[in-house]
Length: 260
Image (cartoon, rainbow, N blue to C red; front, side, top):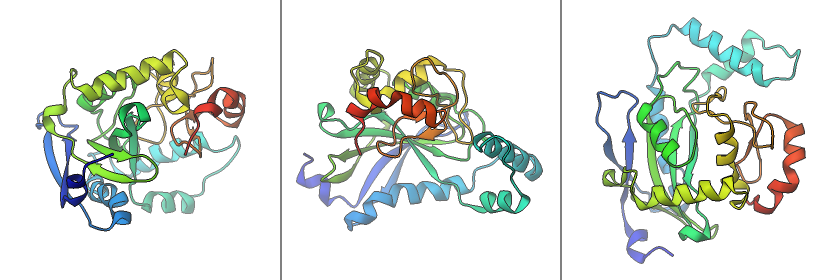
């Protein structure tokens, strides 16, 4: 359980990992609302503002064509995408994709570490974030991050949710949280990590695959499949599949660790 002092803070720290390697990593202070419900979305709202301004010199026409192809790849075979539908999708604000680096399991006292990225990183033709990708890979997540990234820490035991500090000094391969992430990834590879940690095993099977249209790459979590993991488990939100067939085949293995 977190201490009483943690619940009285007015702000918390996250680490900003710019995609531009000429820029240093930074600590950002994020205002912490007093309302518990508002605390759930305060970080993602702050990061959405940052990601809104993200983009490259790629022309609008090129971005639209890239995004269109990504959407078509996820639609049923033979489906069409009208210009009106495409424009509606393009006008939607960027969302913040959360990547669990350390899962908030009882073994780590329900304290998780997450990486936050722009979910339209590929459509915006954002550059690969080499440093963020290396951090994720050090944690056993074989991801290629596109665009700026942020790292934050939370306490979440389903009954309580607390935003905790994540400091710049913790960005190290020897940091305790990285070691916890490695242990979770190893457990997943051995088949003992539960469904959520099992995502690391799926990612490790095909590190060169790219997920569309998001900012990171994920592959199907079903055994013997290395296709793009574009279908997310609606219950645990941590496992991905290439489609309903693989999800159904994997359910017996996935079910024991699949928790909301």
